[in-house]
Length: 68
Image (tube, rainbow, N blue to C red; front, side, top):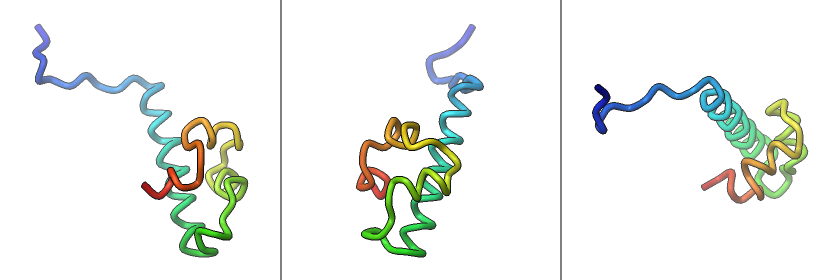
């Protein structure tokens, strides 16, 4: 019997989504440090994270969401 306090193991899909999200955040941070926030584009972040622009915008609708 499962208790409410026990956490379910994330599904493979959830793990993949979280991994993708983390890659995008790490890519954004790296570029913000290297070239500055103002000079970093969403295109640059997507390329660095090895995802499509549409994927990046699905997770983060704007660059400002990557620093919160």
